[in-house]
Image 1: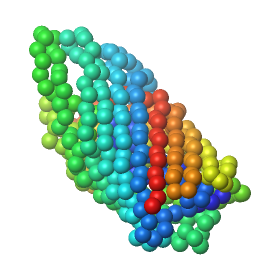
Image 2: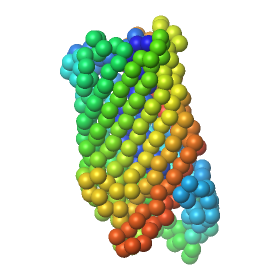
Image 3: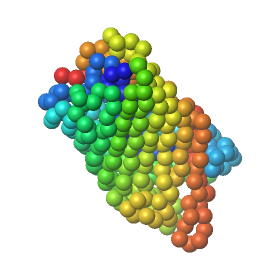
Image 4: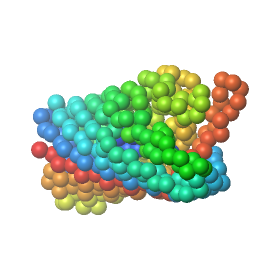
Length: 338
């Protein structure tokens, strides 16, 4: 099994806002013959993500009565990431990613009517550097890739929408973080990827990423006296990939995936500021197709467990974790090398 198959199954960071999981990663691209980028080679990429939350959870249990006004919470989160990668050498490359988002939130307001509010715009742009620890041409059956980057707060976290009170008055209020374009803070991005061929045409793969927030909280109030946090985020995948065809390069994979938000940040530490802490576990099937310089991937992680974590506060109280949950996520990506 070639290195390119594993590249088709790795995940490249795409940092966005959402309910749970708040970190979404779009599959990186590859195929059986596309082992790696050559020195001074470029790659253009487009990856899309579709999430539809249709359930409301408290902890690990679905409880629609705890949703706003006791009515269903419907979120539709759509993003399109545009990326440009340049390989400075056989082992090192730089990737600039600009996310575009279109999302909607539909809830029941105090006027007892359902209202749908859209948001759209540019999200948090990030720059990543990646380094293969071993020369890819000399180690086609196993290697490790490490990444370091920076996420910028280019996406707005002050997007507002109409709010209808019980008297029929309409005002503008800041929308939940789930549909904001950014999280309002800078972050250091850490990434690791690895693969090892275990038998003919089959390899184990792993990829993981962690966003280390450099800001404790935003200037947006969630409720009186409680600001939204700028949380750390993480994601990881582990599974087995199998090559079906050499030309065009076609491979399938099956593994597990976890996306989540920790209760406390590594740097800022405090948990008093509002965040949707928790994690989602998925069964993660994938498909990768490569023909010449063109590469395509598709994956549809299906939720098998979700847990919103309660937040211990400095006051001694505990904030119960709750929010929207999706049954599955759709990721698709295309790239072309030149």
